[in-house]
Image (cartoon, rainbow, N blue to C red; front, side, top):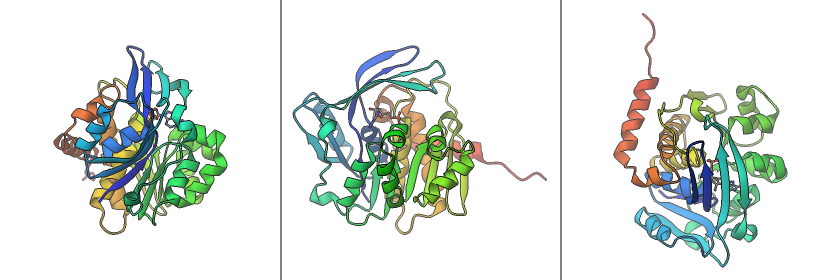
Length: 305
Ligand code: AMP
């Protein structure tokens, strides 16, 4: 089963305390689509300019990522630049150039409209809604967001929330959105705003998943070396959405969502091992399954005698 992925496709400049790289392939949709493609076919929606490397279209083709929904137009590709602090946990945006994104109106090819699973990776919530408007009742909609939209387009975000089955956001965004310091209260409050499920990412501390009467908490895969945290959140969403689309035939149950959160965490843990999409490009399905198994054994414990 395919998953439709919409989001940004970008050229990034990333500075960590030890390295800086310019013009890296990035964007929420680039990470999410590649992560999802390990599980099944992807239908990608986005926009790029004439400076975007044509080789990427070949790469997508080789990974069963359908790029019919990616518009290539005159102008420059969206550019973003960020700098990480020494602990790689906090990041400052140094610059954003919307470029071709400024007039982006996602238009779904006819063949995309009946996709069962939609992953609305991070872009303006009005664009996420515009994509949903063109779809014929997807079975499950995952939406990602960021602090920028909570601060600048809250009404658009509020309108999207009841249309999402699962909202993904990080801990500081959940606190900002609800004005709650407790993430447990925040998760519950966000559910009341519309989505049936909420996943709160806590970076190197794992993730929380909220359902109506259900709750799940998991750690993050412990890594010794992190090179570039960019895209970890998008990769988490892509792994999660790709797993669901490929594996859930009937209703999406909480048990499946728990597995999907672990797959998302596994994919994100690989993403940060190298700059840009490089680690995801060389990753194999076997490596994913092995790390999932390590994750499982690491999280298990017995009742005391
Ligand atoms: P993450 O590290 O998961 O938060 O995602 C980083 C990616 O988000 C980078 O590759 C950026 O190109 C992309 N990005 C940054 N700002 C925005 C924005 N305002 N809209 C869409 N994508 C963005």
